[in-house]
Image 1 (cartoon, helix red, strand yellow):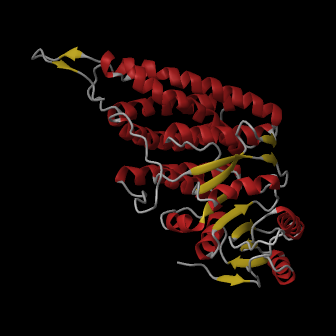
Image 2 (image 1 turned 180 degrees about the horizontal axis):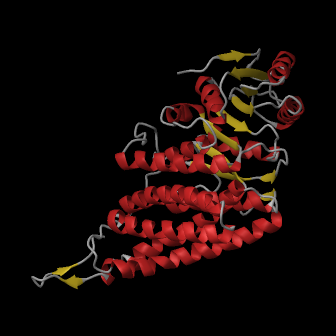
Image 3 (image 1 turned 90 degrees about the vertical axis):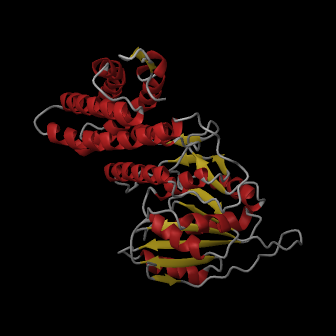
Length: 422
């Protein structure tokens, strides 16, 4: 169902070229806002001035008001009336993904993009972001704060969470892109409109789901290193975002298992690499079990944290879920049944538990120094990210060593040699 939308006045006529040529390729830049009455005008004027001075293509800036309850919409419409290249769109429901879905889906531009209203990302990266899309070289483009050539200024807590989230995506979802959540992305409009039909999330996981879907469809994703300065006034609820992201990852994995979400009708130039036999299923099963284990860990930690200190609550919650995680992966991911070697598998799988315990205990210590007044939910967000790093070790540990078929051969009563299913 499409949300009610109000639009301001805009023009999208091609601008005259500085050297006499006619520029016809239109780029639409969406700036999602929520209760940004005091910042939206300054940031939009800065963006407009930069594009007007340096950008060699016609452009349109669309302010997407996500159901603001202050004077943001009034400021946005005033800007749209004053500046020909600015348009304003109002949605009655919140959600960055919802705003992008609405504006991108209705756009007549050749390329659509978006950036955060605080302009944390350096604008000099915008032309390198959209140029490969206008040339037809790539289908989507993202700014990456984790690229070797990036320059990033932000606190250790947000740096840790960002890096851990992207490591988790690579480990459990086999993602190849480096920075899923940077608020600086673009796409060819004809491609993204087809992807939007399959994307379910309307909030913060929208970016990740869009990129995962594009990657699984064989589309080309271009990455641009960016300069990025953290906004100290950020209103992102870290704990809620972590939970929503985990739910989103579980949902995307479930769809992958059923074969949904791949758009074979899209024009592709890159085919998915062929995985070794059985690996695709194992990765998907491991991701689902890992997500469920993380949710169980979070619930158990919060229950134990009331009467117990953080280190003890973390150790008990992590130990209990690690045992269940190993047992579930033994049965469903690697197809091992029966009691034979079950204890040995738990002991060997416990190495991942020890790694996770070390990382999470260290994270608690760092958090106590950097954020002494952190609430239990704040502790939990950091712990989840710390334990996610252990996931990077857990899967190869289980596949290559614990449940490796070459280590698990035995003789059945008939004398036939049997091995674990690869």
